[in-house]
Image (cartoon, rainbow over the protein chains, first blue to last red):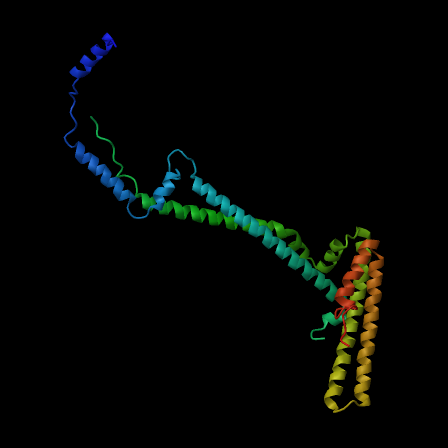
Length: 114
Length: 173
């Protein structure tokens, strides 16, 4: 198979290519420093990091999703218990009013201990 | 070549920030929950609270429970007001009769004519009071629509006329 002339030209250029820029002197030090900082952040409790992965504390959100979820749950629980409590109170009060009416027409229920 | 930025200073510790935000979110959720609870209970019970604070709350209850019209309610209100005076007198007679029986039982060691008379008086007062009450109940029910009257009679029968054992209660042989 005959070699393409452009390939040999490319090979020559690649062989002649040299990287002249140098790494900074403290490049390795910086890398280790970043690793140390990352490890220090990950040590201890791991759950914040897990939540951060859910972009709870990510930038660009006007209100974190966790806050919305928590407030939504609070709203739901508050509303549900409020409706149940109002219903219970109304039922108790309705029965109390019924008893009050009965008491108002029954002399035996108006006398304590009779 | 510029060195990459390392976020180690200028912002709070991530754990501190997380805890602060978690507490703030929790407090906000609890506040919203309590607020929703309070609003639901406040507005959910507003109507009955207004009824309960009424001077004639029991009559307002009667009006709503048995769907009385304005005319029916006015007639029933008048009948009820007239009956309340009679009921007070009946209460007084029951108290006197009971007190007389109590005293007769304490004074005697066996069933004497005095005890029998006191017991008879208690039974007579009770019968008169029940008759008067039943007459009032029928009078009230006559002011209502047939369905409401039926429900009313059923209610008072359960609560007043037969407060003890129902008629179909099994009795031991």
